[in-house]
Amino acid sequence: MPSGKHAPTRLSTYTTVHHNVLDQFVRDGFVDAGHDLEFTATEGGFLLEGVLRCAGGIEIEVRKLVGIVLEEGDPLVLTRWYSYNVSVRGLGNVFRYDSPHVFDSQGHHAEHHVHRYDVLSGDREGLLHFIHGEDAHPTLGEVIEEARRWYYDNLAALQGLGLA
Image (cartoon, rainbow, N blue to C red):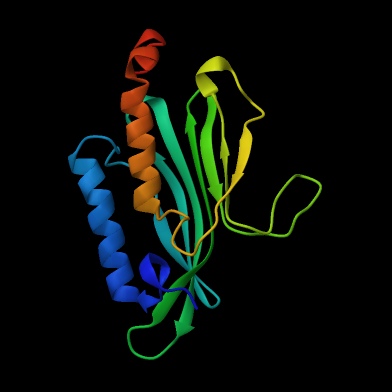
């Protein structure tokens, strides 16, 4: 079972941390307060889905299953799988993190990985990078922070396109 930042935790702790992290990005003005990200109860866990609308036309599409590891009182939960896709509205993908899944004809892999695109140059193919190490793949908060860094690193180009 994972340890470190991806270790199982109580559902109440998980949701509190989740809301605090999102609230911080909303207060900072990077994430729009009107996001539609929400938890839905499913068999054996909770599905977190929706889109975070951010500065510069950036959108973060979130799909994540938080599974119940131990169901007694405040359930113990653990992320089972995730996909975080960061794109710029009207331009395309910036990067997408995916949890392991079976390799198939569409190029998906059985390891944590990230697809990176040079969206400002029209790149639609991207480059695939595998992520090794238990704590190397990101949390949602780390993905939002990476998107924010990308926004500020590319602010002049986004302004030139009328997106910032």
